[in-house]
Image 1 (tube, rainbow, N blue to C red):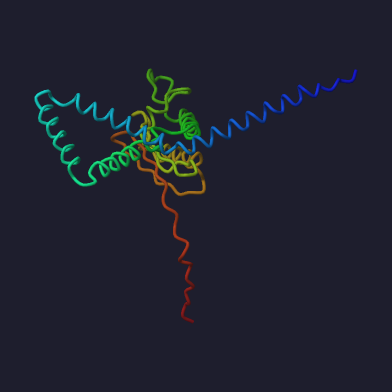
Image 2 (cartoon, helix red, strand yellow; image 1 turned 120 degrees about the horizontal axis):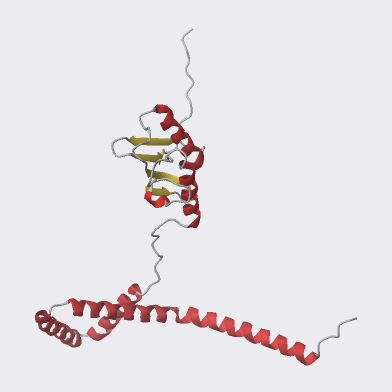
Length: 228
């Protein structure tokens, strides 16, 4: 059974609603762009007010009187100086704009991909740094990798550039074969195309892995001529 076409009134009404939404969205974006400096200044004024109030509350009561008198004296001097109020207003607006600017949030930990890489590396080290007789293993499947990895760093591509590992005291770090297995695993999991340095601290049961800088390619191999 063929479908009946929608009435023209409904079709035109839907088109007008869609057009109205697009116009409203465009107007909202334009208003946000135009009012962005004002929003920044207002945010900065609010932050300055909060900061001033916190400092005032933290000031001892016996020191509030002299500070209030000093502030009033500064306001009087600014009012008497030529162009003082205008310069003071410009200074306050500039401080508010600087205080209210949008800042890039500071990273406090690894992102999702870096966390997944660290967790995968932790799981790969479990068979080497754990035993069935350990009642409180530092390395265990599904365990907390943050207890074993004291420090780490990544490059812009999300690859490890340094890693500090704490391992249990019963690990045979004095044997070259055991250390070689760990180094080979870390080399494989962190990237084969780079050179690594492994620093073993047997007294503190710590291993520090760092990526070595690539050798310069500006100096080519020199051809040596042997005497006939």
